[in-house]
Image (cartoon, rainbow, N blue to C red; front, top):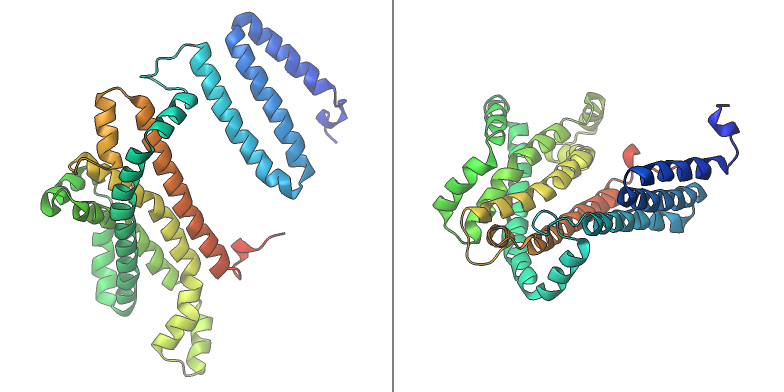
Length: 305
């Protein structure tokens, strides 16, 4: 048993009060922020030890609210310029007063650019992985070229694609396809190799042909890799669509709005756009995670307990 566990429970509050007192002597604003952080940390620690179902929701909720509170306190106590960092309440006001604009940007960037590009890029990558699986020439020739193209910076290729496909949604879809295609391809190719030689030999003894082996053995074993690629690409798709709008778009869209509002120093609106993008990315990632849990319940990574 360590020495820390032998200390009485009241020792830690006393130590923390002493720490806050010392910090107060140096900077009273920092001491207030530290005190709020320690109180929230203590509440979270108590809830986490209980392990009740409600704690699984309350702990991250309190943690997130604590971060927002500390952000608000730091901005107000230190009088940080809104150009440098706006307060969460200012961002919330910008969000509430510009919902029509934010919704139009969401439709343009996410629904017309990111999601079609995500579906096309990931679907084409899986089909290409199946072709590579059937062709040794593609395995030797396409994969090294694909790795090289995947390393190209999107900031350099995006303006070229925008010039090729114009300022409409087509150019954004092209940029998103270029961003998600190769990460998804690498995961799909690796997933198709996941089944063991013994499993494939067993299917051969059952007189299963290539397609039966593919659908009943190799694709199910590849699902964890496919979902890993889908989750990675869910965020890449949003980044690609927003970056593409920096290089040309109609007067709507998240990338266009961020570029314009930064020029006007309206950083609260910029953060509101970032919030919409973060919520959309988290939602898409969460959908992929739920689908993964539903379809790969048999995999060891999905087992609980």
